[in-house]
Image 1: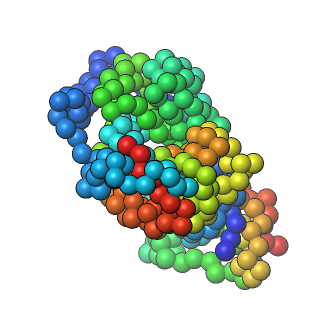
Image 2 (image 1 turned 30 degrees about the horizontal axis):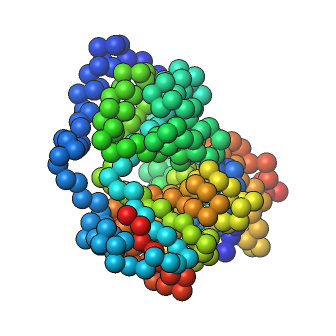
Length: 223
Length: 94
């Protein structure tokens, strides 16, 4: 991306006109794409022992940031907002408390923040960042599943062609890849713990797929 | 199946994640209005189909979604090299 787009402060402020708080308030109940699966009840009624543990982190704020990785001002602005530098190495991620940043492509990052903070973080970006960049709140477009347990690597081997061996896929690595017949952004958050960012419209399909794939290991739902 | 090195992700991935996007290095005419029908037609429709070294455009569709170029032997399927858009191939047909 070029930095030819140099805006005046007034023009910069005008870009905030397009920013809208997608979550009007905590009192308004949101529904995740897996609302119909009723994971809370399944967590209470279902088995407590098994090789796979599944938990949905629903209604998080998903922000897609695109900017120039060679623009030191933009990198510094992102660090001021997030409290952590954007990961510049391919396939890496960074965390700061509840904020997590994934490298998606050389000029694109996926930032996950608590759902009710998405608007605040987005507004901060508009205040801090200058030049040519794009920040899109895509919270409604995807959801996050966390898979853990003794058999989690075996389960994922059925779903994706990526090499999951600890040497090739260390903790903190993030890949965007094929997942069953859909796609997912997979991040290793622990030795036997993975985080999947999946598309909203594929959430039900992946939920059904994971139930089938984890049948031999035993699936424990957590909520 | 190809095992393709993505120059942006800097690692090998399965072909499943990629899409081939045809011949590489096809510059759009700078002044389309000044093109003859023949020149425009060749730009739009005519593609090489070599036996041997071919330069192709690929996209890492399920990964970083970036385009890159690949030099491939259409006879042996061997991938000679991958290189980023804007770079020139080091392996060329004789």
